[in-house]
Figure 1 (cartoon, rainbow, N blue to C red):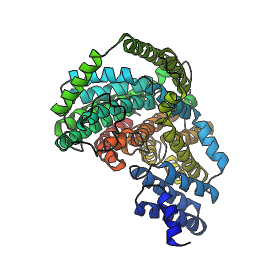
Figure 2 (tube, rainbow, N blue to C red; figure 1 turned 60 degrees about the vertical axis):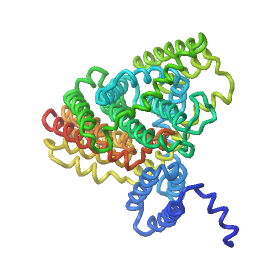
Figure 3 (cartoon, rainbow, N blue to C red; figure 1 turned 135 degrees about the vertical axis):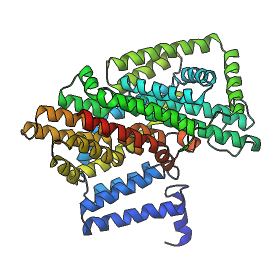
Figure 4 (cartoon, helix red, strand yellow; figure 1 turned 90 degrees about the vertical axis):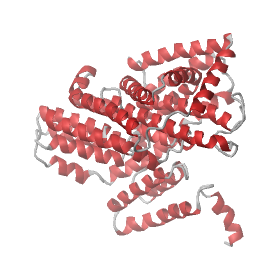
Amino acid sequence: MNTALANPYWRNFLGSSPDWYKKTIIAFLIINPILFHTVGPFVTGWVLIGQFIFTLALALQCYPLQPGGLLAIEAIAIGMADPHTVFHEAEANFEVILLLMFMVAGIYFMKELLLFIFTKILLRVKSKKVLSLLFSLVAAVLSAFLDALTVTAVLISVGVGFFTVYHKVASGTVFDDAQHDHTTDDTVKAENEADLEQFRAFLRSLLMHGAVGTALGGVCTLVGEPQNLLIATVADWDFVEFFLLMAPITMPVLVAGLLTCLILEQTGVFGYGALLPPKVRSVLEEFQAQENAKATPASNARLVVQALVALVLVVGLALHLAAVGLIGLMVIVLLTAFNGIVEEHKLGHAFEEALPFTALLVVFFAIVAVIHEQHLFSPVIEAVLAMESSVRPAMFFLANGILSMISDNVFVATVYISEVKTALDNGVITRAEFDQLAVAINTGTNLPSVATPNGQAAFLFLLTSALAPLIRLSYGRMVIMALPYTVVLTAVGLTAVIYTL
């Protein structure tokens, strides 16, 4: 094929991604079958994990769905995993898929209320330290009783709202300019560039405090994270019993996490400490005043409906009246019906944010299927189970934490709790030892996994959201900003496991 004919195909392949990135993905696709037939599936499986993390790390160069999907398709094609295993992994996480499809879309139709509330909070709380603590604490409390992904969706929606408001003004246009493209800085005026960059840093720090907050709260209760419910079901714990068993570890970790938040804002290290620029504050105040001035009975009615549906949402999630995704679908129906959003094209916008990530998550399940079928984590599990009972809880905490940084923490928890349940059933460990190890598994999969976006679904959702490129939140930057939290949460959690279990 000559160069003239080949060029269009090359240009189309992975779109506007850099040439070096395209060549790297092609190299991966060439190397993997060779490795599979030479060094075997176990080594190739670990190489595949590294390659998939590479696509996540460079999410701003190319959305990971396409390169990660190509790697997953090839892995299944050469026999590293069976398609039925991929389906089983997706089926096991069907509630998470439903959540992403419907709950995130439901939050979209609540954005007027969210922007109204959070604008008031942002403008009234002048101290950045207090504001950061508020974001972290509210995210923690909500995640303990609702769901970390739902809370993250709220944070993303608010972040995009704030950024869009200022970006319009920085570009010399008005608040009501529906045609403005906030994804490019081409029209931003030179005198506003410094303030825009500082505003980006301000939003990045708030969003990261909030994201870590979802992990601090999510570990505490039976419903906070998907693996919590899984572990509680196997261990036969109810809501109160789960909370009390976890509390000796989760409460010190919560306090340590909130103190870390304050220290990071005070010292300004690891990308934290950026203040809200005075010019941006003025713009947001002007925006709020304009919104208040142009309020009509119809717009006020929309806010009332959104507030009532938000109350229904909180009650529904707190009482677990249905699967989270189904409650999200109910939210969509209620908000659109009572606020008059009945055109199909207006409904479609709500799903633009969630569905690409939902597809990426299913691709991730394909990688998890490879981990499962090739028993990539088995050596670690067997080594930990072979240790003395006195050191097992601490080693389980660390092993689960490290593996959750690489893989899906739900998968890691599933594998470990199954092995521990088998050991209990076979009389290898006592019920008391089982309870200790189950607590170590739960805290291990929830706390150290904040180290990387692939460790926490909420972090991965934030990384691949529409907000991440707007505020320049890359994989590497997330890892750096999460590092102090990772160290503190892991150290405090491990200490608590050693001295309380």
